[in-house]
Image 1: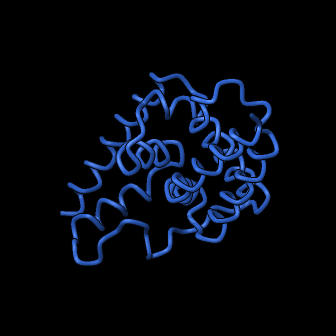
Image 2: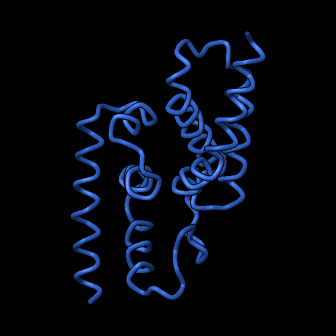
Length: 158
């Protein structure tokens, strides 16, 4: 039985690795830190796999661990890095998309991570709430505030 759970864990990690990196990158703003956070989260999750009571909650549980690891890296380094020019998903040929990505990158961390999880990675507000360990209403509020800030920034840039 335990090997079945281990197999499902590694299948899930393989399928989610890109999303995990994108989420970690939205927090750390550094490729190397995001890679470290993903690696650390996978190791911690695997070590704590026995603590997972409901297998259907694997994804939010894994992302919550990832969030903790990414924030821990930031605390250890005591710095917030500037966003590199190679923003994941930014399309060099699409000026508007780059402007939008830059607007997202300039958001406060809490708003930025909600936007990345919801719009870029397609997670529901319920899943984001579980990942960030906040109420669903807070997620919705953050998304609304983020949209308003992005809209304002894009209008000012015109």
